[in-house]
Image (cartoon, rainbow, N blue to C red; front, side, top):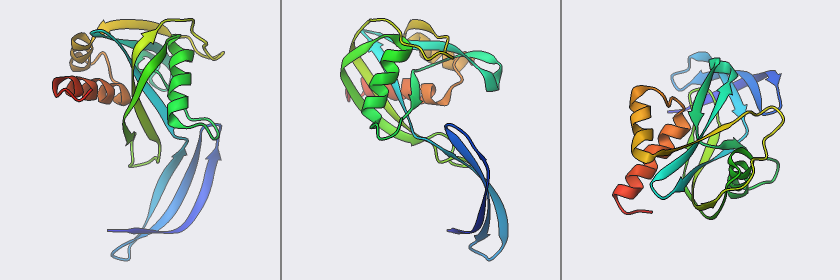
Length: 178
């Protein structure tokens, strides 16, 4: 299967993403339109202490609500995913880790965006002071892994990267892969 781009028109360019409207030819010769969000890659990190995980609660404007999620952020310039994950962990939670391991990389929603997230698990964490961006207001939550899974089932955790992180971490614990 394939799709060939015939032309592309930039609709919007912002700080972290650009929106394009592309005309493509399908394999059978038909033409159609694709709306594509080109998004910077991001790093996300699940901080773990003993049998608890550290999550953050913050307001997310597109949802008009506070959500519970793992620390994450855009990979800046020539920064590598590991450095971005360490930076975001420190900025959003105040924690630092001497034992951070990359677990997986995944695409957030490949039907319309190329955004790729790199997931890390941070263990042996040491608490410090948050270094929040001027537009961030973040509350820390320390909860058991089992309670976080219950929160997913109840619909209290709705963020995909967080759901992926928690289930992946639980699986790795259950199969002795961490």
